[in-house]
Image (tube, rainbow, N blue to C red; front, side, top):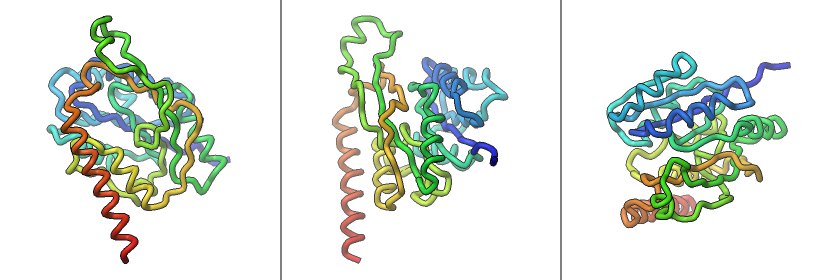
Length: 231
């Protein structure tokens, strides 16, 4: 029997000290092995780096000046050595069986390029009652056709290309739109593969700015499709 494939889990962090340790521990708790954890610190100044370094040598830690999440992810994938890539935001959590479920699907479907899953949101338990009330209601189940809910073959990821550093938001949506245009062979598992934390810093901020960026992502995807049809 061949050895199990190495999965590189990528965490990028910018001033995420409050939740980073829990995210890292959720990767170390995975029932699937072998796993390589790559943490790229995108210019944090809140102690995120010190938290990540406490887990050395169990993870690979790299610091770069602030460049944005797309640039940080791009650096991470170029540093990663796994045959598969998985992405985790520094304030979210993996269920313990996430990678095992997704890798089992790859074992059953050797021609698959990407395996997605579903996302469950939760209100961060460290918030006081007043702060929690200001958040929107968490979704129990969201179809997660986004990088944070996917496991992707290395060659398939690079076939689609790196993340778009010209975007501030919608970076994952843009990559997933390009993956769809490349017609990657994919499946969406019914299981929850990501617990997404809702807290004061990621819930409803800069809505107008974010909406404009998402519209730009969708327009770019439509323009690419029109260009493909016209050639």
